[in-house]
Length: 99
Image (cartoon, rainbow, N blue to C red; front, side):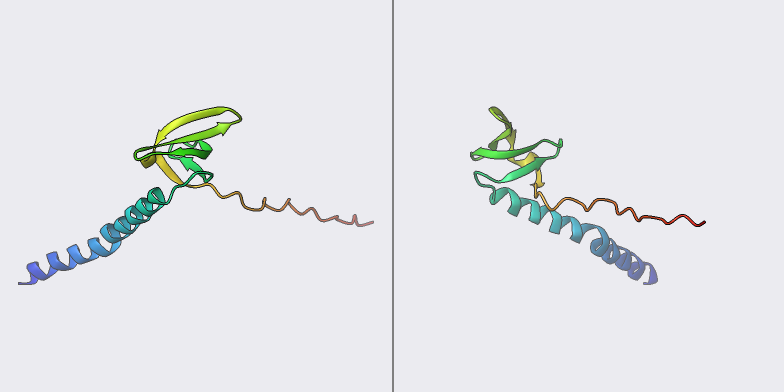
């Protein structure tokens, strides 16, 4: 009886730690893919950053540079590319030299 409880506890822990977060991640990725539209900036799993020009059922066309367009599968989109404020420059404090 103790062995059955132990196995059940192990399965519950694995579900909470591994399976459930992965299911949430997959659901979020599906929502991202279904919400893609023209003009969005995205980053692919390969690291390509581009603006969506055409959205079809399985593919999107990205403009990665002026006049340079590539076709990629929707499933290869890793996420939206949000250009945030640049990181503040490193502060340099003037150190007074001791005499």
